[in-house]
Amino acid sequence: MAENILIVEDEETLRSNLARYLAGLGHNVRQTDSRQEAMSLLDMESFDIVLTDMRLGDGSGLDLLQEITRLAPFAVTLVMTAYSSTESAVEAFRRGAHDYLVKPISLDELSERINNIAKYRGLVRQNTVLRQEIQRRHNPLNIVSRSRIMADLLQMVRKVAQSASNILVTGESGTGKELVARAIHNLSPNRDAAYIPLNVAAIPDTLVENYLFGHRRGAFTGADRAREGAFRAAADGTLFLDEIGDLPIHVQPKLLRALEEKEILPVGSDRPIHVNTRVVAATHRDLDKMVTEGAFRHDLLMRLNVVEIHIPSLRERPEDIPLLVNHFIREHCNEMGIPIRLIDEEALKCLISHEWRKGNVRELSNVLERAVLLCEDETIQASDLPADIMEREQHTPLALKDAVRKFEFHHVTSVLETVDGNREAAAQLLGVSPATLYRHMERLGLKGFQAHTR
Ligand SMILES: Nc1ncnc2c1ncn2[C@@H]1O[C@H](COP(=O)(O)OP(=O)(O)OP(=O)(O)O)[C@@H](O)[C@H]1O
Ligand SMILES: [Mg+2]
Image (tube, rainbow, N blue to C red; front, top):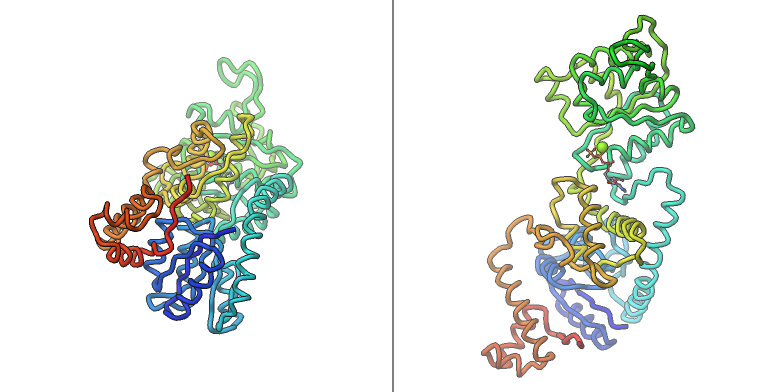
């Protein structure tokens, strides 16, 4: 099958030989000698395979590898290197390379690798689905991720889950704090005891103490039944205090005592009760700042955050987005009882480059729920996404020459498409001679242009 291949190599002869050879095998080939240009090509077009040199005139191919994950999440990368050093190969794999070739490049070997990749790509799709299925069945955490930063975090979660320490989970809204609290419980030796979540922000200030520590019957007007309270309900298990930053200041010393002495005093009672409850607290607020403002007790904070687990925002781990996207599409399709939708590359790119600020993972899930609803065939397109996400934000504005190039690229491509790739007709429409058009096409990486058959 014809693959769309991008060659990034600053050695002119090698590059054109490779391009000629691969085009001869029937692939669609684009080529460039610079990392910068490679990035704009990756941004504008869709590639199946990227064949890149490890060392480029304007930067390391290794840096390009990271960009590829962001710009072309579906592409498979083959690295070419002049040195068969294990270190550089390991580093290339770590940054997402699929395979590597040592120079001088054997063309037979190259074609074999490309064939393998083509087979591999067919299997990947199937495999991702299977792997997620397995992960869902065997992963007590339900936390989907592949980024280094989350892997480290999960390792920490596994470790602290074994201890009895109090844990504070922090992170922006929707980053998965509750999920992590639940994971700590599920991985703890007390996983068979109760897990009781209590959202402090959702309880009226005057009742927080009752909810936490319970009350005796008749403790106040209307208390016609004794209430056990969350601490006792979670005895020997885990009490998850969500939105701990909203804990009223008058209740704070009481919680401190419960944590320090492992003793609580139900409202209206003078008999302390011993409780062995592990507390995991969470907040999206800056507790240190609240301490300086006098809204949160310093000693209580010290007790709560014996271990602090900070969940990074989704912006800090774009590598997780493709997996989360598949996960949520599946989840929402299952909920709606419709066949699992796919997502096209442009839409995925929009989701990866979006600056997730409002609600992080929760917002991503909501966006996909909406997209699944709007989507009219089996594939989610960029147009099924909210407008602010569909318009891919550039992190830094393009340099003028790149912006011009981007425009030229789209314009020339669309004219060529309208005339089914006929160079002469296109040149006439564009008001240039065929020779000039050829020159522009070469410059824009459009040399091997073929119109899509409609
Ligand atoms: N890594 C992840 N894998 C799968 N689902 C996730 C992941 N992170 C978050 N979610 C999902 O995103 C949603 C928000 O997560 P959660 O409620 O844990 O966030 P939170 O940090 O507690 O948010 P808030 O600050 O608003 O209370 C949930 O539906 C959760 O299942
Ligand atoms: Mg929460």
